[in-house]
Length: 472
Image (cartoon, rainbow, N blue to C red):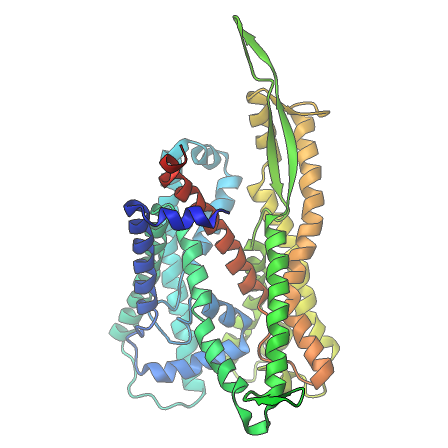
């Protein structure tokens, strides 16, 4: 990564224009994230949302990727989840139906058709999700006996659902506009911005606790006192060191790859010889990226969300209570109520199932996006081969064994990253008797690191293009 070249490229008007367009779209996105849904008093629903987030790990994850749109009850409450779901469904269907797979390989026109179908599918998904969220939140407000200023009419429901669907479609459009600028994947940048936007509030609360000297100040070797809370200071220092270590580990994990040497057969045409060169085929350690963690979070949190919905309708529903008990992620918010006697066997149920799902989804999604037979066929058509391996079926089998070995370590490493919040909570439970509220977010850090590295690569590539003449 050549940062000198990147900074030099800012002198180029086209490069600067692209960056300013991206920044402008992100500012508009953050502005929209604070426009409330036109339904009753937003403060009333925000209180219900806070309860939803505390009870459901899925709610916390949705709030993370929507940039706080859930807690502010904004028109971006649904966020990009309909588009992401539609993309996953279209990818699965494309791999399952041969005619669609051929269409996806039919150059730019085929990809445009599939992208258009993805956008169309995202609309009904956004409508369904908007209705579901509004219903759950409204029932939560009613069950909590909070007085509402008025009873929403059918027109109010339609207006609120329309506003949420429009917000989701606008966000999807922003992502595509950012992608067109050629300096990164738009959807990834929007999610990256969503996660980063949560930092100011976290740092503000952390700073307030750090500089609260009511419990005393920190003495440095008896020479002088720092006006900081000594306990919070050491906790913050420990977390800062831990985050740096985790980021280093994530960068190495994201960049790790197995390089396979590809040989091209030498061909003689007249008096000229072609081929006889070598190339490489890089196989990433985690080809699936952060998708398995997102799948596992959504899949595992769905039972708790269903349990909460059933309990909202009927508070005495025993099945709903069981679902919420087993499938609610243990955290600092619910530890005192769910585990009054400390850690029990139930505490390990959610983390264990989560780890297994991350591993399984890593294998599943890698199998979808990495077609060994297709790669082997393409190599054979190009007259390429792997040394010591026959072209065709044997190459496909060799690639399959290689990717499975990589997946074994990659899936376990990804599962470990997803377990970081539970590991840190367990450590603090053993030390202090209760988990700490500042758990390391393995999912958030993984998304941030992966997206940052990928976008830096694309910016660096474009910077090399616009500054190429200077290196002639």
